[in-house]
Image 1: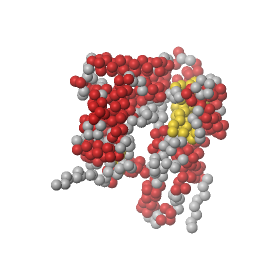
Image 2: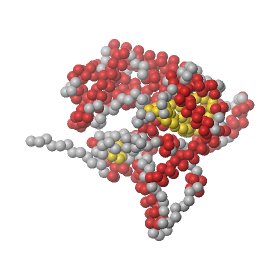
Image 3: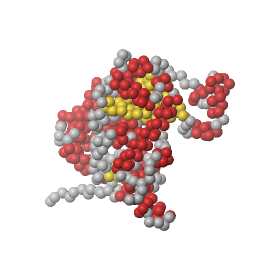
Image 4: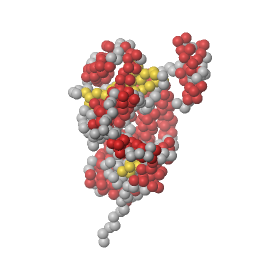
Length: 522
């Protein structure tokens, strides 16, 4: 008798009210619009989908269907056709009680027109920012990456003081035609500054990663930059330093991590194995049906892929038992190491997320790093005493742990703390004035004369007092999202799409609209 096929659930358009759409790669899997997480087909039912918003996005749980419709359409350049035109048509016919055809047909929404409008708004916001940087001091942060189509993309952000406080803005993105050496990167920055008439004298500080092309003593980008701005303060990116610490693991743990990566690749790298593994996960009633790949350039992926592997560990062992017995045995013998690394990398990912985002300052970064350094002592002491309150995955295999393995973990935690203290010595020694932390509590008359008037204004600003206690880089992530395999020919820089996506400045739409002649009737 033929075995009955398991029911495959289909997507219902009503699921959009829960914030889910079909996955672009597999329409039988639901994908969250907010975090872009893809779930198994078993989750394709209202009772499961409803749980995601209150749990992972509580601030969006009360949003209505229209909110998710806007999110669904905002990246596709079809908002005008799918949302604006129907709204205009309804407004004209309902409010004005007129035929809406003439009004709707007069609104140009062709692909070329939309692309041209995006470019004009991008140029306008860029000019606004350039005008600000010509007369204000600012700091800059640069990094480069290789896009999916093998182009080298250099991106720069700036921070400056505006009427709204410290403001962070996307400055520019440029494709590097040939190499990514320090001279090439500096030439790109110098060319942009000359084109926009931005003086190097306004540049106060620069943050980069620790790559030789950036920090080389003679030909690095920083060395060339200091020739033009000798007094500039240079900083090694705190996020990059933290990522380097995460790579510091002992030979034993590195070997276990290698077994984990090989096991994941054994399944994910072969289409047949991936399909068979998904079927096995479904039969075992697993919460997830897919493993996550580890990508070196994505700093959170190491922790995420190990966490998923731990969730599906028994099923992975069962699957590898029929495909590669030696690899299965090596993975099983490394279970304690893998569970320990999954817990530790999850904690390091939490630190990484705290160090990202707009408005993160050195004061906030110092608090985050110093707090984690103290926690490392706590973790080392508790693990050494076989107390695994802070390592929940490791606690599930505590009965298998040997004293030698515990000694390896405590030594690894000690090594990580020592590495962090070495890399973040400047941040730990940073002296933060008390008036910065508590500007409403300090005695103005005891402070430097240059800041006394500003402190008085601040202390008497009731609105500032009310918001004081309530108050990335994400550019490369947006590049990966916008330049998908369906739009791999999109030039993010020339089109202006990337700037509008990352900039918080509003284009002068009234001025731009006034420069266009109204489309006459035909």
